[in-house]
Length: 444
Image 1 (cartoon, rainbow, N blue to C red):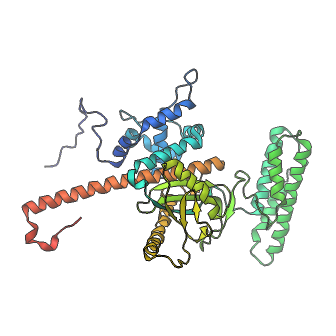
Image 2 (tube, rainbow, N blue to C red; image 1 turned 45 degrees about the horizontal axis):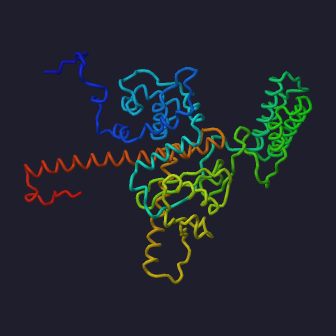
């Protein structure tokens, strides 16, 4: 007989929202381990009780930031999925299921700006504390990578056309009448630039490029004459810098809306140049807990980033790493803030015990490479959508905090699997002793 398909609409009068969930679920366990009161006390200073609309709960906003980077979601997606996922809601402190969005996606932007880099660092510090003894090892590894900014591949023609469009927008906003908008001229020039790869069209395309640059310079100079003194001064200075820069110049402008972006060459065969900012990642040698995640605004030499990276690690953990293993990019530095720096150079005459220790440390150092890969592919470090240098700093620490939280969630999940495997082994050995079937013996 088929099972009755009539829905049972009767719900228990005694079951609470917490009792209906799986208590072994990693998000359920994580919700009980995080010290939410720490965030509520630290962020209370950013709110007032005298006026204004009631704010969203601090735990809710912090949980959305954590979930966003754990699940690799956008602001819009994490808000949408929160209304569909009971574990997300319990993680955010909800006492009953609510089939509605917790807030607008833009409120996450305002909350990040409100708590600033100091608040994000507190979340990162809590993720380190969650890992317990694994975060307090004597040795660690450090490496640098690039977090790319959300900009297109920069070319001179793109910059010139953006300068033209922004100059026209400023003129319309301020009620300035330009001598010419160059709309039809730019359309003709874009057609000439299409045949750049052909033999006959190459010369014509270069000539069109020079014409576009000339038009951009005319509009910038006209705005400089007609705008009041001091108004849009920084914007016009940025336009002039982009127009005057040459191929071999340093501190070039690659994007008008993210003018601090740096061009970095990391020696990758598939991607010769990356446009963004440098990031220093520090992990423990054995367990791989991220104990330092620092954004470097400039394209500094790797060894010059060690002082700031170790200072952050000591501030967050309260301990000093004895040995730090790095690659050849850090060559030339032996000791920073009480931490010995080891790079793969010829050992020379040293005791065999120390030589074995160094070989083991350098072999273990390679483990930081896949961790950086997971930071990029799983926790939103590959492309940074937050604005400005502050956005760079926030994105790095949130990605590192999410990976630390995810590490503990994976550990709890593995423990649950091992528990059930051992339980099934015990049940099987009771009904069918392993002595009669030695080939099926299970070990853990």
